[in-house]
Every structure is written in structure tokens, then in C-alpha cells.
Amino acid sequence: MSESAVKARRRTPAEILDSNARRKTGSAVPDKSGDTARTGGTFQPTSLKLPRALKAQIDAIARTEGVSPHAYMVSTLGTAAARALLRAQFSQDAHDAGRQMTEAGRGYELGEVREYFAKLATFRSGQSGKPKKPQLTKVV
Image (cartoon, rainbow, N blue to C red; front, side, top):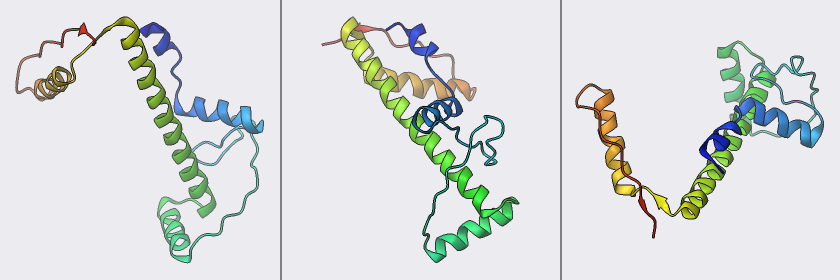
């Protein structure tokens, strides 16, 4: 798979959540505010039994954010689901890149990559010149 093909298939967390939710349940995942009107989705009723201390924390945080405890929990769960999907996509992308590198027989030495990014950080902070990119080498 070419680099442009890999980039072309990347989606935002909201797109991933929405398409996965639609595929599994036929409805959309609520956005950060808990609103599904934008996507025409519906809520699926559920029940959570929370420890008192956790419920008290949720209530306090929701109050400070000016939302209901329900809206806060929906938002928090949506964020956690989006992060899990991003982690899964990152893992898949890394696996695909490793496979592509093995198939091509060329890659970058890890030590050179680490050194490049360390130098790049100092360059971006204005403390050094632009570093040379690492060279592709034969993968053994």
C-alpha cells in the first residue's frame, strides 16, 4: 500500500465513532454535548451502578462544567471510545508500516530516527540548525 493510500484512508475520531456505531447499532454516537440531533441518532438506554465516591466526583465535575451528570458521562464515554479507536488505528498503521517496510526491504535505523527527532526538537526551539533526515537503509 502506498503512502498516499495510507493517508487517504485516515478518518477523524468522530468519523470512526460514527461509522462504527452505525454499523453496529444503526444509530449515531452523540457528540461532545450528548446531542445526536446533528446526525439523526438516538440514545440507547443503559444503566450504570457507580460507587458513591465516583458518582459524587461526576456530579461535582459536571456542575463546574455547567452540564448535567448525564451529559458529562456521555461526553466522557464518547471521548474514551474515540481514544480507544485512535489507539487501535495507530496500532494498525504501525503494523501496516512495518509490513510495508519488510516488503520493500528498506527502512530507517531506530537510533538515527531518535537522534533526528531530538535534533529536530532543538531546531524547532531555535537552538540549532535544521537536522539532516535519516537515510533509508537495507532491512535485514
